[in-house]
Each structure stands twice: as C-alpha cells, then as structure tokens.
Image 1: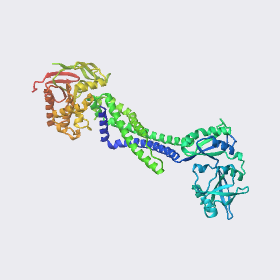
Image 2: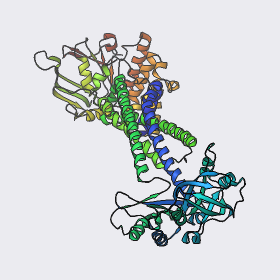
Image 3: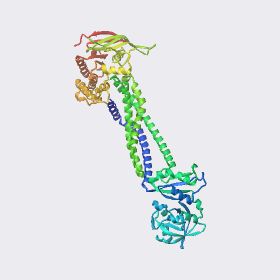
Image 4: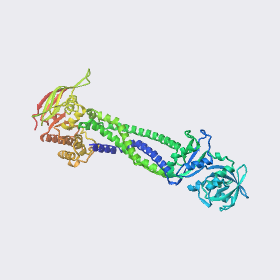
Length: 402
Length: 231
C-alpha cells in the first residue's frame, strides 16, 4: 500500500518536473548550506587536531595572571615545576630581549632569547655546528651563545663560527659571549635577517645568563614559561600542570594560573567557532524554513489542481487517511529528493573548499543520515496542512470541479 | 429476487430554512439483485441527488437507506468510503480517469484501496480491461485514448473488483453516437452476466435500453415501470 503512495508521488513529481525542481530548490540550498558548514567545521577541527597529533613535540604555555598575583617564577621554581610534571621534555621561560651583537667589524640589531636546554631535547632546534645550551650552561649561567646560520653569516661571512666570541650590548653595558653552536635557520631567522636596512640577528643564550646580562633578578625571571612535550602526552600533562604550578607557587585556589595548549582550539577559539557555526546554522535553518513554506505552497496548489483526482479516488473508496498519506508522501518525497540533491551539492562544495583551504575532508555518515531525516521531516511537517485540506474534501464537490 | 437497494422515505434538503431546496422529497425505492434500472429525469429533478445517495457519496436528511440489508444512511466518511469500495462500481459521464495514470493503473485504483495484493490486483485489472476489449491499451494514458475507450477503461475500473452494483451516471453523455452504442452494449452485456446495473440519465433513448424505468421529477418518483420495449 505505501509503495503505491510512493509510486504515485514519484509520478506526480515527474509530471511536474520544473515546478517540483523549483520547489526543491529552497530545500536544496538549505540542506547544502547546512551540510557545507558542518563538514567544513568538522574538517577544520580534524585538521587542527591532526596537526597536533602529527607533530612529535608540542608546547603548552603557562602564565600567571598579573591581575590576580604579583608572583613571578624564579629559576628554582622552574626547576621544581619541571621535576613535578612527568612525561615532558622540560620547560623553558623563553624570554626575549632586544640588544646588539658587536663584532670587530660592525654592530648588528639582535634579538636574544633566554632558553633552557629543553629545545634540543624536544627536537625543535637543529644544530648545524657545535652544540646547543646544556643544563650546566643554565645552572652556571655560562657566558655562551648559540646563533642562527643567518646570524653567523651576517656577522662573520661564514657559518662555522663556533669558538669565536661576540660582544652583546644590552643597553646597560656589554658582555663577551662564546659562540658554542650554530643552529639551523627557521622561518623567523630568515625573515628577520633579510630586512634590507637593519637585519635583526637571532641568538639564544641560557636564560640565567640572560638574567645576568640584562640585570634581571634571578628570583623573578618571568611570569610565563612553555612546557615542551610529546603531543601524545598532552592531555595527561594538561591535566596536572595547573595543580603542580599552583603548589610550587603557593597559588592554590586563586585561579591565577593560565594553561593553554599551543596549537589547536583553546576555549576562546572554540567558542568563537561555535558562535560562527551557530549563526550560519541559523541562517541555513531559516532557508530551510522558507524552503518548507515553498513546499507547503506548492502542495496547496497541487491539491487545488487535483481536487477532481481526489474526488475520483474518494468515490473509488479512498479513505481520508489514504488521501492524507498520499499527499504527505508526496511532500516528504519532494523534500527527501531535495535533501539528497542538497547533500550532493553540500558535499561537493565542502570538498572543494576543504581542498582549497587545506582542511581534511571528512563526511560523517551519521550527519548525512541526520540531514536526510531532517529534510524528510520538513516535507512531512509542511505537508500536513495541504494534505489535510485534500483529505477533508467532499467527494461530491470534488467530482463537480473541472 | 433479493433486495439489494432499499430506500425508505428518503428526503434530502439543501439550505434548510426559508430558501430550502428539497432535492428528494420522501422517496422510497427498492431495487433487487440482478436488475437493470434506468432512473430518468430532467436536470434539477433530483436524479443527481438520488444517484449520490445510491452511491453512498451523500447521506439523506431523513429516511433510511439499506444497502445489502445494511443501514448506510448515517455513516462516517470513512465507513462510506469502505461501502463505496466494496459495493459500488461508478461509471461517470466525464469518465473520471486520473490523467497521470495508465489504463491499467486506473483500473487498479479501487483494488489498491481494498488492499488487494499487487499480483492479484494486476490479474483482476487485466481481466476487466480484457472484458471491455482494451487488452492492448493497458499502458496508455487517458489522453492517448478516444472518449469511448476512456469510458471503457472506466467501466473496467467499475467491474474490476466485482461490486454488486454498477452505478452509471450519464455514461454516454460525452460520447458520439457510435461510442454510445458500444458503451450501452457493454453495459447490457454486464447486466446479462448477472450484475445489477443502475443508469441515471436524462435521455429517454438511453433509458429505453433498461429493463425497468424510474422517472423522477421535482424530487419525487412519478413513475416506476417495466420497460415494455426491452429486448
């Protein structure tokens, strides 16, 4: 019996191809935009998560909220925190200061980073010549420096500069530093070194040395630091970092410690994404509503046009429910087809966008199923009014219409 | 002869009140199984109302209608639908085929509403189309057929489910004389095969084909006689 309704609905849609398609258009646009938004959102999340998973090492940054506490980290506290969190490569304050590199030949603008030995352990730095900072360098505030390839070339004209010394001017006087290593350039080195007028050279020194050079109190090195870790340990590290830091700093319950993962969605990005997605979803929902009203409209027209057919069917013994079901089925099939076409469109569009933007493209089958169900439900809902009108027709009146 | 249709003192009043129209005025009528009856009347005589009543498309304002011994005068819409489906095969003046369906699908319609399975349905519908000589027109749509052929499809639809009554409302009204003759002959043959046939018409020439002629005027039966000319 229901097969008959579906067959009859399909033939009625076929008989009114143009009109049916135009009616479906609203649903198609609605469904495809909903789907596009959702698929791209998924792809974006997956891509960011994927990046985090694919890179071996990642960082988590920790900072003290200056509005809640005046405390800062000392070297000893860094060491305690480092020892307190298991499963990490280590931590580094990553303080950066401007200064000058002075060679016998020339003075250069410089950016000096105060780091620990951890970056080499984590593999985020690659040495070309010599060695990186060691724990001993940090503990003893050794006057040593690691420079970038670009910096070495700029200062000396060649790269193998291990063993040479440079003077570093911190505005408060100069210190002589021994170059212990040359590290591979990263994007920032290249960019800064290629400023035509004033290239800025990068150098890394133990953060304790940086405190000496810049006359920073070693008991108040910084209010923030980065944890270097394998991304597979991330959840576990994120879970306990706050309490370790709070314990070491004596900041329990003051909510002064901020922990954020370097990559990926932190709370803010996530909520912005949610807002954007919801706004677009609401717009899409409105277009679905409009599409649904279009279906209602065309079904009402169809009922009026087919009044006689309804009369015939009733005279042949169709019950109220048979007529109701027939027209509901027609509306539902109309929007179901619209939904299917909308899915094809939505999937294609989001595939293109994902490829262009570089997101991974994932279609969740449950999402597709849900979309199909929603579009069919729209047809059923907006079909109720016209179908009821059809079912209530008096057969005598209906047969009399031309 | 067994009673098939029994109408007792039936009235139908439209617009009750000052401008009321008494379409049927205390009409009583009995039609037995296997009869061939023509109900003749001018337009406005109440014959259409009577036909709607007989066809269970309408209910009387007062009086009783027993069909097959069952009181069908006060039924819900759905109950009426079921009675129509079971008891009555309609043949309309305007054929009333559904334009988007093929001949076969049109004939299958009442069987669908009766809940007959697909195979059985097709068998019955094909047999009915065969009966009216349209075996090779099954996949044609109404607009691909002549008026006479369309009316034959309508007849096939009316007989496919073998209802006790064939109710024909001006069955030849839209047809040329050749096709009319053809249709009347088919209807006669169906009567001879044992079906009860009621024709409603304004045309004495058609009425004369029936065995019993009931004349209706101003909502009343004015004569009810056996047709002496019936052959």
